[in-house]
Length: 254
Image 1 (tube, rainbow, N blue to C red):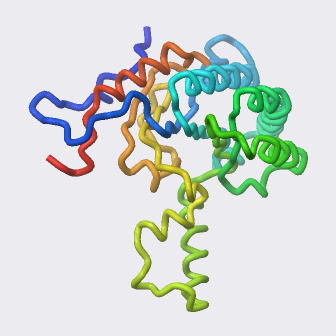
Image 2 (cartoon, one colour):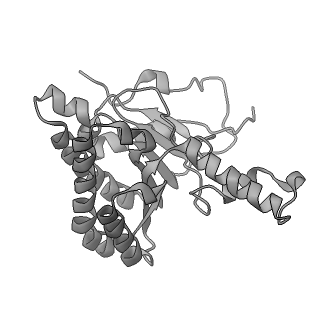
């Protein structure tokens, strides 16, 4: 039987005092939604059924974030490496994304949720891009929670794109090399203007970052759930929050 969080994710805080108490809820949660395919395979189902079940988990976790006061939720929906999957699976994923956007935009309006996206979304199929842009435009003025979909996203690609922008500005004399600092880099990432995640959750028990928000999660607390993403629901979400609240964030201090 899987436990919800792995013991290896819990730090030793027995002899240390916190320098900054954690708030009741993190401001920004990032999630690597992993395990849809394995969940389906163990049940003798096609992979697309795992992705459909994963979409239901996203709906429930979105609701839990609203209930607990989280202001930003970023989910790894489709990585740049996912383009290497079989064409039929990619087609099914894009179709599922389009369906999710069509079905949930009205609900996001009712719940005051703003939808945004990060990544090289120009690589998405035209029909998918259109549906994404419609949902983003319609929800643009909502303020309760921002749901940020990482689509055709890779953190290394993001940093490369930021470096190119900064280099171009330097070549044009709009920025001096000696003036480039952490804030400069952050301002040119896809997530510019968004607070860095306080908590990163990864499901399915894998202990990898998988090219996800490498710059932004430098100081995030990490919680690993043994549950596959389709199994990760409100109970597991609240257990992850309890683990987060048990941590002491020192940011390099004693």
